[in-house]
Length: 187
Ligand code: AR6
Image (cartoon, rainbow, N blue to C red; front, side, top):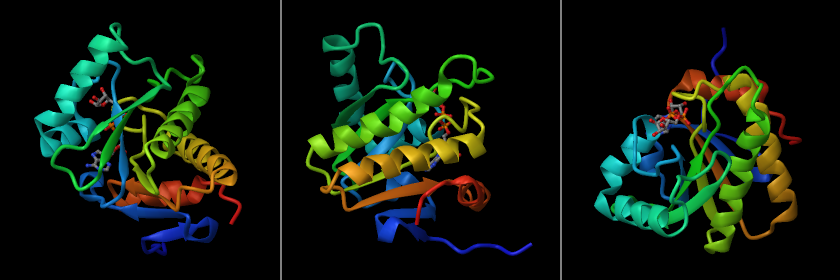
């Protein structure tokens, strides 16, 4: 089997696919695969709060109290500071829990990407990075997630001129390879 090398680029370099730890990304905004409580958890969420520190959690708590008393619904996103991380903002987005495709999961995952990118632009970001939302603890199939993420990002970049680069950060080379095999970028 031949192995691809990373990073790989799409859409004239406006999209980069790489393997790594998103907490180390030097971009304006990183997305967090959060849960509706916004109070942290495992996976990439745990890593972001652990490395970013208390400032992120404090702002998450304030957002819960002022705007989302019952939690942030799936498909929605909110922006906070990035604490000690190299990024300027963390955009917390709540992916859908995979339920055999019976609960509008595809639409909700698309909304995670689109709403996060909208927030990044609203905050003046030029670069943003995403983990593979919902594909860990929430069990969204990685092949379907690749199609949805790439469609949503390309559709957004076609309308937006301010974002220079979107970086897709996979935690393993195997996950990055699955993404490459199933993404639908036009170039
Ligand atoms: N950098 C990049 N990707 C990562 C990192 C990292 N540091 N750590 C994990 N991943 P998950 P979900 C990958 O479970 O499925 C949490 O407990 C990981 O390999 O983090 O949306 C939250 O609090 C996988 O491919 O997020 C929620 O309760 C991807 O990130 C719940 O999990 C997403 O896996 C959300 O589940």
